[in-house]
Image (cartoon, rainbow, N blue to C red; front, side, top):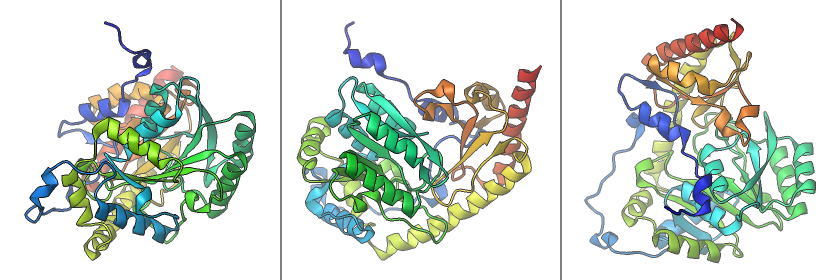
Length: 388
């Protein structure tokens, strides 16, 4: 059977495979970015207009677009509702951007490490992924300038607020510097912000797109981490030169995002009810983060190094004795523990052994300690076998 040449580049998603294996109730899963089911809000359907069952506008529901634009402007993003496109989860933004910009061999700039499903989307269309290393407060600036001088990326894809997987939040100084470099080299920015609302301390940082003076940009977010991931409602906001193309690509992909999910999101966004829910969510996840920190200190202090995440859903661990953590998956699952190996978050995974991404939102605190104890034992055994 003759498929397109693109299919030869299509990689399965390791994280989706791990999540499938972790469905058994006895498995303690630190693998995915799943919200805690106890914190999924109860939603009402009784007042939904029957018209929501009809076809809708490709751009999305006008009232929802207005609400998202208002929230974005409050963050400093210069936009109005006619720059907002409602998408089927912010993952669709990456697909639309890939279709808009990428031909085989097109260069794109990414953080190292970066979001696994972004890599999957960009590489499917044949992107040549150029990377810049992450520091504790954002990308290494000398390296970023060198990349921009040596290459001509079609866009830079960045996750500056509680980055997935590293949990890094760019400092204000790094955000200013990154914006200045993208303006200087006229590189489009795709800024992905799924975790912005999940902040556990008093710090904050305005989006990089609000600091750009001339470069084009796409700013994308979602309700998947704060409301219900099953709604599959996200958004993108784009500069006027990009928006019409993204809209046509959206039309050709799926006509419009499901209106029932859009209506439900609209019942929450910008409301007092939503602000109260976010406050409860932050308190809940802060407790789970602190519980994981305590368990990590008990079981991983000798094995790994990490920073305490100030937001988001993940710890990013660096093993003191590196090994390919993908080899740990099978023995960990045999102990009813699932986690996410760090290697697939890099463009060149074999060159970056010894990282683990651990989610703290999903496993209940009373099971957390036992799960990390078992995972630590698996790592110790693998390191002993490697030395033997």
